[in-house]
Image (cartoon, rainbow, N blue to C red; front, side, top):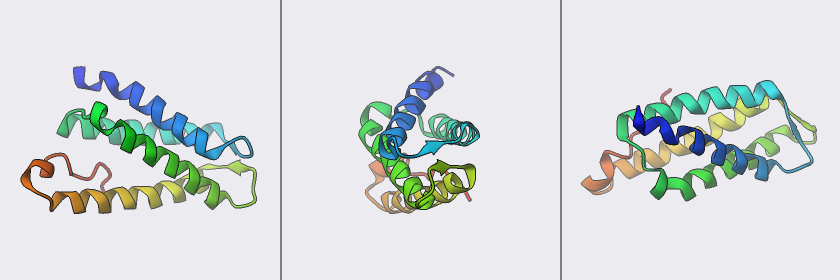
Length: 123
């Protein structure tokens, strides 16, 4: 359980990155934030339990993915000013698919990468 101590910090950094990318012109519905929080708390928690925490080395990459999620959700929202759960789900699915492709690619790198390259999001 000590490994999960970083989970709140990881989620806070990720959601800060999402918010920075979304910017002031769109409003994220509260239930969307709750949905994202539950979804990624579970996914990141599973990743930490199965592979250990690598937050200090992966922070830049993970927050970059958070910013990318923010950009994608803005794109999916189009001209609308609200980001609801349906828009967030489409953006999340798109970003998670990219993360899975990257993890699969990394799994084929030399042996030192294989243990940390398991996809965090299963279909």
